[in-house]
Amino acid sequence: MNSRISSYFFFILLFAAVVAAVLILFPFLTPLVLAIAAAVIVYPVYSGIHRFLGTGPFKNTIAALITVILTLVVILVPLFFLAGSVYSEVQTLYGMLIDEANRSQVIDALNTPWKSLSSMVFGVLPQHSFDSLNITEYLKSILEWVFSNLDNVFSSLAKVVAYSVVFLLALFYFLRDGEMIKKRFISWSPLLDANDAYITQTFKKAIRSVLAGTLAVSLIDGVSIGLSFLTFGIPAPALWGTVAAIAALVPGFGTSLVVLPAVAYLVFTGSYVYAAGLLVWGYATIFIVDHILGPSLVNRGIHIHPFLILLSVLGGLLVFGIVGFVMGPLILVFLITLLDIYKNSFVKSDTKI
Image 1 (tube, helix red, strand yellow):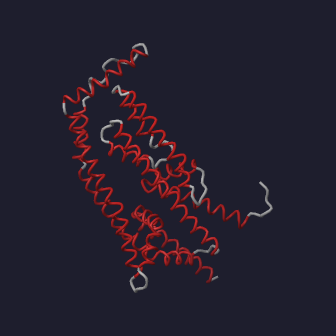
Image 2: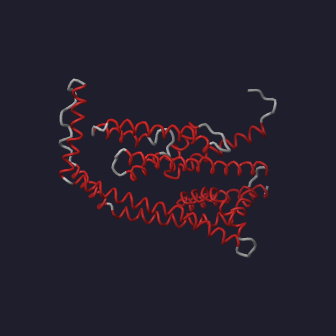
Image 3: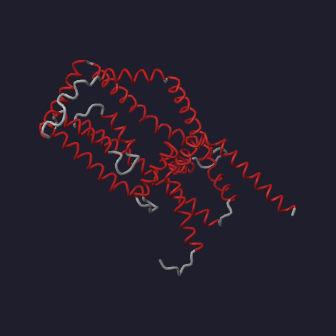
């Protein structure tokens, strides 16, 4: 009886400690999950540096530090040049929109095709509907909102800096001590060692294929759309290419949210040939990258239906925010892995479906 009470009390304490630990670590869920994913993706680089260093008492630490620095350089250098281009383009757009002559040209360019469209549908649409377009007032309202929420802006920037520090520290320790951490968690698991190893390997494959593949696809989409905008005269191609890369994280239709408005802009300004060219280029890119290259990258090593990946990404973004594009697919992979273990361990081999 005393032994049973002691066991009950132990599991109550264990449950309380787990809940407390989750509450403590939950604010850092985003950088920790991203650091785990990044550590798995760049581990081959760490392993190569580790072998290159040969023997030494601080070999793990030095290799992890060099890998983190290289990762930081690979991320920050393109972002630095991209941010400069985007900032310059935003300034140019702002100058164009607040200039009265440019504003009149934009309104005339919009009204002309609108009038033609109205005549095609028997005059149902109102004439000169863009005359009341006051871009300056819209920009003024946006700037007023930004200045009235500067405290939120600065707090968000401080949060980003804190998350970045936690991410870099976590990435360093996951690289240096990753094998030890994995062995510790496996030793706590009540599952069979073979099942633990299967789950670990499947998660590695999922991160390297689904997440790395998704990021590669979004990067290729963004570069291609940015180049197409530059070719066909869409203002601020670097800005919209960046938006396209972010939108491409939602597979299937994310890139269309950027391409179609640009095509509509060219149509409204009378550049019909350019509009057709951009439409062909944009959807050729979407078809090749999202339907040919993407599946070969995303499904490499694991086999998950693209529709399930789409749902997992969208659901993850809705539930977890930006980190959901990592959490959603990983939760789906975890479920499929457990179902495979269940099928292999508990379902009779002669069961017919």
